[in-house]
Amino acid sequence: MVKADYTFVYAVAPADGEDEVTRSIVRRMIEVDVADPAGFQVTDGRIRPLAVESEIFNDDCRNGDGVIRPQFFTDRPDGPTPTGEARDPYDRSQGVRGADQGCGTVSRT
Image (cartoon, rainbow, N blue to C red; front, side, top):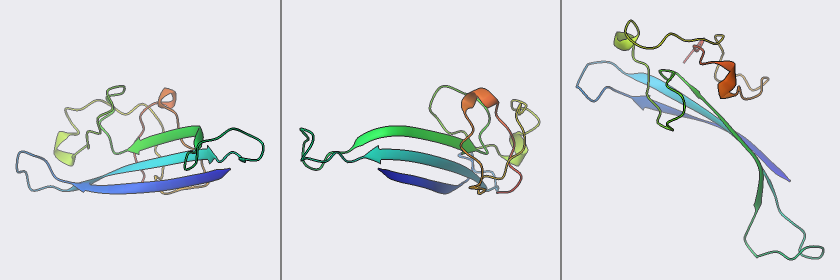
């Protein structure tokens, strides 16, 4: 079994030309299995995903459409209100928070 826990940090700016830059942070965890060809009928070069989890930080909390919408400082008064706890997106001591646990704020970017 192979486990990976990785974080991508995207620096983004608004498309309308505003002079602001923010970060969107995406953490992904994946577990894959490589079957032993001596015991199983397998295809060379293929792995079997066992678990895939992800969490997006500094998003505007619109769930379900698969699009990352960075939350800019100028948009905060008009955007959705975060419902979850503030979390450190770089803290690996905690697992990935599921979408059912709310959309929180980041404690640092």
